[in-house]
Image (cartoon, rainbow, N blue to C red; front, side, top):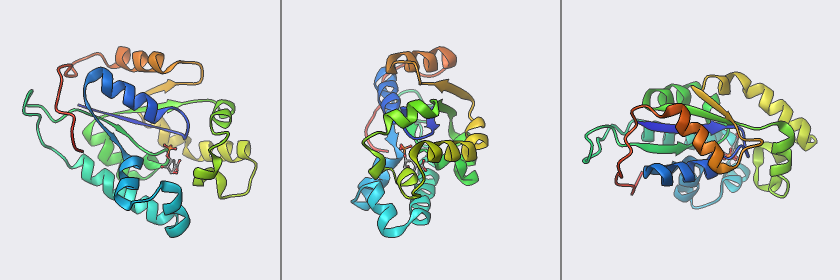
Length: 191
Ligand code: S3P
């Protein structure tokens, strides 16, 4: 089993993914961190130097690689479990969606535009999808969220993180999915 955490920027994907991975003792794959490590530069620098289209190619190719991994866990004999945190725009791409849906359960984290605006205060400069367009930040969040509404609605489970602590979000996910996922410790190294 793999849990795929997706959703708009600043909904808590990375933090929740880390906590979930620790709780379940599953591997953690953070797509943006992996893209950034491979490129040797932060995401916002990839956007600035090579543009969004190039970033989306790197994202698509990484997701294709991760989702094609059909190796089995030597301990339980099932597909290696993992928590995969995607970047906020990944699910919009139909190829990414199909690949991710085929390898695990897609969980979308949400938050209200006001909460998101508050959470991104201070980090707008390193969020190219919010900083590039010149529009006021709340307007930009609203527009982008609206344009992605259908993409996010395809997730199997949606958890609103606006008024929940990280532990409450993790509990909500585990409560909703507490059927048949392996809870023994698995090797956690490598992607
Ligand atoms: C993006 C979200 C970012 C990152 C990139 C594009 C988006 O990830 O992938 O800046 O299109 O929403 P986070 O959602 O983790 O901030």
